[in-house]
Image (cartoon, rainbow, N blue to C red):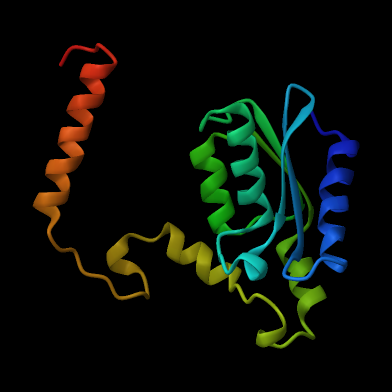
Length: 169
């Protein structure tokens, strides 16, 4: 169930970017059972890390605090509609519900006057298309190589994992 205090906290975190160099105004909190268990602010420029979005940082924080990688049952509150990378991270982590403030369109309008050098440029629509497309349909050139060697390691790991958990074949 939506709670305004959690959205207010996400927006408050985004406001830190007004004073903190190397950050961008995208804040996020992760909530479990009515308690904030993770927080994040976009530090992409400060950390030279294009994955350091507010949502990803909040998910990382929540996973560390809860000592898990499964955030099923957690809600995510963010100051802006997440990009495809953040949505994929939310899906992998098992986030149950997304609440967001500004839409991608609203963010685009707010940033319209900035040059590419003045902002961290993300073509959200191109990212959405590429993230959902099979590898052979993406614009980025790619080539598969040494798959037999990689698959052998994957199979060995899966076999060892199965044995470690005591499950029969």
